[in-house]
Length: 134
Length: 145
Image 1 (tube, chains in turn brown, purple):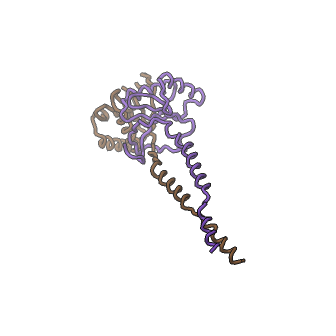
Image 2 (tube, one colour):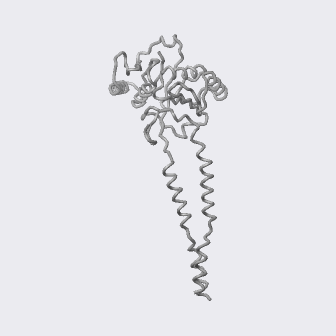
């Protein structure tokens, strides 16, 4: 009697788990295929001063002007490449991180150039950024 | 002998209920979650900005307003197209309620002409928001382009 009962008990947990495992694997594969990883985003902050002509007259001595044109960047009146802009901004940053940088964008310049110049300023730790549209 | 036959019939009628349960759970899960992907404009291609402040849930309070600007100049919030006047009215209402210190993110396509960005920025400054942020990609995780 005792022997028979024991054998019965040992048999019942041997239910077929295969379909459930199949489903779980399907589920897993579906997730691996469909889950789209999101890009990690960053934000580049800048001030947008009022278009007040009186405010612009008081020119600060430490004023760095980056002009963003459709062809590229012009730093303090001289055309520069992205790498050179980075190098020169780094030199300014070594002197003072709080110097004011004015980014002047022309109407037809692509937004990518503005983001690139803001990124370079952020890279070198410059915080006093403002954007003008010309 | 009799015992063995009995056990073989038992394995045949396996309970299908757990499998059906799992499948239903699966269907419910997809119905609930897959809806949430389309609440922003997916056609906007962002420029790289590796050195900016990383956007996380912590530095994006619920008051954050994200303005989307597609390549052609279409302005939208959560992929709902807005006219310039509507954007101005929304910003005005937000400034009246929360003050002008809430974060404003501009999610503009990398090829948008600056004059379009300028229009959005002018609307922001027009209602008294001076601090603006631009969204860029810090690290590509999704397939590039």
